Length: 415
Image (tube, rainbow, N blue to C red; front, side, top):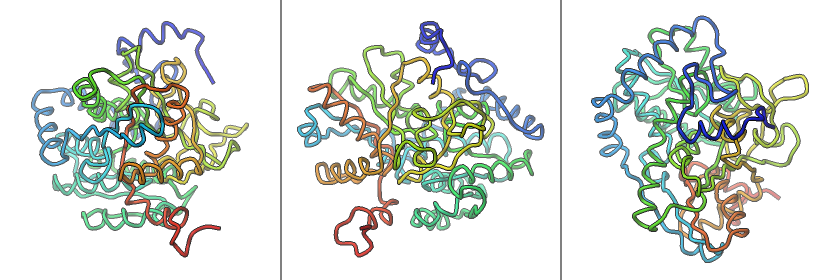
């Protein structure tokens, strides 16, 4: 669904890097829709972002942590067997090799460093698949900050290994039993915690969603993925990719990969959402495929909602994509036509994950496997091209789900 008939001007502004504007808007999307009690905290955060984020001393501290602790730059890995099967040149940006096993650590350590500069006494975070929770717990342990992570009860059941990791890293994990008991409800609870102590608490939001300046802040911290990948492709492949693909839930790994390529008109960009079990409301988490604009968690963006504006529960085999909204910049990229978004079903995702394991000896996260589905489809229609896939995280965390749905020898395998 498009909200704009002025796509040429919108695209021109995108290519010039004019978003967000001073109000935190990405075209029609974004902004702030929050209780009055949070306005001063968001104003302080925005002021802190402007003062510190691109300051030389902060960037030096951040880059040192990314290099020495996170392990950046992450590898760019050719995938020759997938390439032969797909009829393409396939390259994987290996965020699964970053410390804690996913891209989430880039944002977590950056925001934790910022929180310390802003004088925060404690950190709260939300998590779905658990990767942001683990990253937040690790970053807080690194910097000596207390950390509380809110996680939906359903996600706690299907991501038990990550719950244990968070606890070992010193975080307090709070099960959320209200609402849909997944990522949406976890964000609700983290926001309530923040509202109760906006001066001493810092909310370390994990995706490119929420009120301004969070979508901008997360994008800037995650864009290290795309900047590295762009340089690596030029060095290793001798050219930019013909296609960049990433999975999209709230959208942090995708916006981090996409943003440095937006101005490269020859590079096509593909975001792959969670198609779940089908097209009906409650059967998927494909916000841009089936959603309409509305307000959720302090931002105006595309949402999965019914005819009465009630935000719907979602489904995905991947906990990290199980969210009824999407970051406002993705809504703009979709509306402008610069990025194409499509969806992948649970069945397709499980097949792509198994193919990557067998072909390349790499176990991707269920979230990341969505990108493989979209990239494989595109390759079949565009033979011989260069494809760059953001492998946003590793799949160790998904073994309980994979044992039930995919591993042939498991007695729990679904029938």
